[in-house]
Amino acid sequence: MQEPLLRDEGLDYDTFPEASASPRERARAGALQNRRVFLATFAAVLGNFSFGYALVYTSPVIPALKLSSDPALHLNKIQASWFGSVFTLGAAAGGLSAMVLNDLLGRKLSIMFSAVPSVIGYALMAGAHGLWMLLLGRMLTGFAGGLTAACIPVYVSEIAPPGVRGALGATPQLMAVFGSLSLYALGLLLPWRWLAVAGEGPVLIMILLLSFMPNSPRFLLSKGRDEEALQALTWLRADSEVHWEFEQIQDNVRKQSSQVSWAEARDPRVYRPILIAVLMRFLQQLTGITPILVYLQTIFDSMSVALPSQQDAAIVGAVRLVSVLIAAVTMDLAGRKVLLYVSASIMLVANLTLGLYIQFGPRPLTPNSTVGLEIMTLGNTEQPPTTSFDYLTLIPLLATMLFIMECLRPPGAFLLLLGHLLAQSALHRLLCA
Image 1: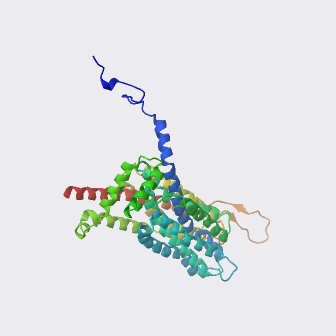
Image 2: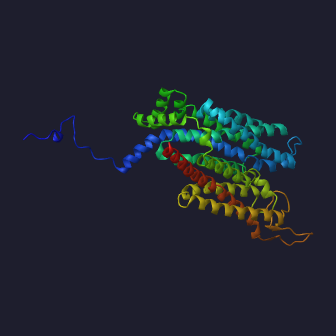
């Protein structure tokens, strides 16, 4: 009897498949394929690093300028308040501009464009000879920060493969927090002008790296540049077999290009998640997180603290970075709403404690000095100064650390909760279609 053809083996034909690759080999292949995605993501999130750095730039600079001997740079309370807060005006303008630039220039070019106001703003602050240069530089860096904060997450989500999209989606916030920590740490070492000079470095590196990175395949497809989109996706995946993913992106772009009707917009399943999104972000900002970060060292200078205010600010920056990592790990270990409730409760207690301490706690003996550590003697006595430590001076540091830690968890939990609500809305629309 003739043997079945499927049992026939030859040099060019093998019926039985080879042994599957080991987990280590699959992991190595995945790492090689994702290496270019990681590089493109790193190049982009340097913009978030610069945003975090610029946001808290005033924390060590305002105390230094309040003591400046130059009348043109000496800041009073009102001027210091404007110097810190004008950043948010620029950030608002940058965020609104991103709505146009994201679709006009594309994600990558919008991020690169943000380097122009950022570089000019840092240069103005580094060479400032008057208040107007400080305010204009601060506003320009705020504009760049608002633009990158809106463009970078979109770019990262559109170039990342599904397997690592969640992890890479956390890198913008992580890099922003790391940028703030870097500013607090450099504030211990550098004068305020050199802090502005140091802020130019990440921006220039971002421009250099992004020059070699591709644009978002999804954006290219939305503009009808299919061949460029396929080339970009092939480069990002380091693989020529990307046609299946490419077709998926094409299909999603076609579906998302359809306009939402007014009747659909009035559907509670559509507008309620959006209202929740706006309300949650508004309430998070209303807690005072941004003013605390911007005026952190000034806040510590205004009360009795256990350590010098520069060191307290650096510690809070380090805790903020650790809290982002903890939030990323614990996000799926508890329910979204439970996490929101717990975080909001701890924030309430921490903020209330800090406010009561500022109002009723001990005052510093001299500006920019550690209090409670040394008791000065009066008169010409030979008695050596006695040393004591007041544990109450730890309260503002601990309260700020708790507040910062818990304030970073609600956005992540809220975004997951919002995604769940939007997914339910999309499923409802499909079933009713």
